[in-house]
Image 1 (cartoon, rainbow, N blue to C red):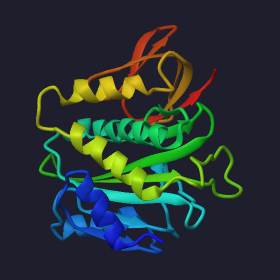
Image 2: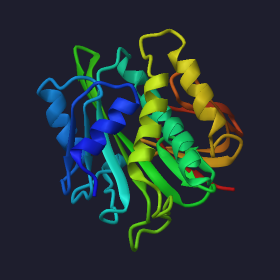
Image 3: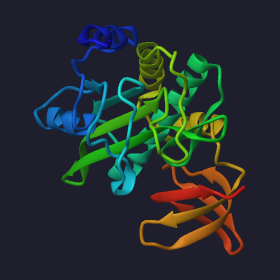
Image 4: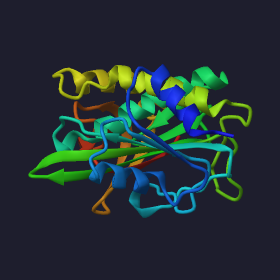
Length: 252
């Protein structure tokens, strides 16, 4: 059974000094982390849980887990980034978790734009949810939540698991080390480095995709590249278009 001491060891091993909180059961680690952020918690304060009863996904979806068979945690960040580039944090988290999960499992874990991780380029094994608070046109804080299935929840189409024998604290430590090492949001080369790392573990680039924008419009074509903000550049029949916020389907 995971304990607060386990989280403290994982954070310390990653070279981070920040408070941690463990809940056996919680509504949502993101909601708990947002409360901590509002109360002034420092950067990299971490909340983790064994089971979520109100887990959240992007675009109002829910995140379901198999109790005791998922790594679920949220981290408070206070980056010096323009709000329109906050998506770079999700991409960095995706790359760091793909690297850590591939090492832990011996499987190929790759990133589907903008916030999913696929195992062996198939089932969804993990997802990322960023929630940002903007004040005076600047990021006051960001909560970055990740959920990784060790065993997939029942009756969730397309869900996959990393493996029930994976040590969740070793996976968390591997993720934190990689994310922390690449987290330099105030440096001018941050965006380019995030794009480089994400591209190396992408399951999306080079594929035919259909993108659904937030306004309901759709674009179809070949996923060609990411721009410096983390937007997906799609080569369509009418020329290149960039999707900054939305979701995509891999067509083939």
